[in-house]
Structures are given as structure tokens and as C-alpha cells.
Image (cartoon, rainbow, N blue to C red; front, top):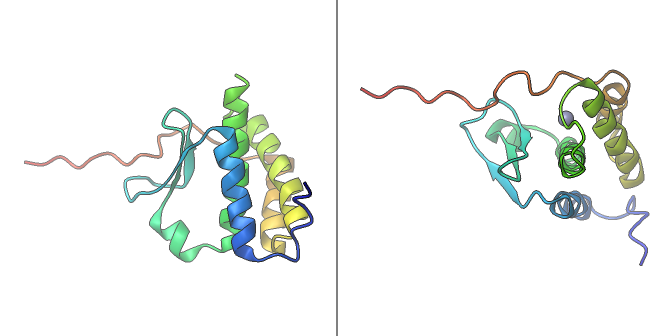
Length: 136
Ligand SMILES: [Zn+2]
């Protein structure tokens, strides 16, 4: 079975492919929540969490790149290797860049993943879940 090249296929097919990667990694839930500060994968909940703003105002290719990136984090966690920290971020973005190139994602997404695969970014240092407001 030949999955690639998908570059001539529709954006929806690329999104489905990225979600399949996420499911295969063992993250079984995709959720949109306004209780989080940024989109991320919740390893324990096996969920890819997205903010409403990310879904409504981000690009489809950016979302696809993020799903592939976070699917790799779940794979790192499954292998009991570090899934947070600069090196884990570099590895996840390096993987996502390779997939993004094969999927033919847009230039902005490729450049973002390329930069992150070289330099990484901080992760896991703070809790993405917003504190519940106290009710009187
Ligand atoms: Zn990451």
C-alpha cells in the first residue's frame, strides 16, 4: 500500500493522515477546550488538546504540523524516553518536518518546524491548564 505522495491530495486527506498518526501513537482524543492556555498533548489523558483560537484562527497546515509533532511526543512517552524539554521538542519537530515535507504543507509550517527542529522550544515548564476561578 502506498500512502505517499499525498502532495496532490486534498488538505482534508492530509488532516486525516495526521489524525491517523495521532491515533496510532495512542492518543485517542482530540478536544477543543477554553480551559487551556495553549494547544498541547496531554500524555496521561491521551488527548490532543486545542484552544478554540488555534482551531478557528490558525491555518490548517499549522494544525496538521502540530498534530504530527504531538503524535511524536506520544510515541516518545510510549518508548519511555523524554517527551518534554528542548531535545524532545527538537526530535518531535524534526519528525514532523519530514512528514510535513512529504505531505507538501505550506512554507510557513515548514519553516516553523525547521526552526524548532534546530533550536527546540521550552515545554512542560508550566501547566497549560488555566486555574479555575474561585466561586463564592
Ligand atoms: Zn512539542
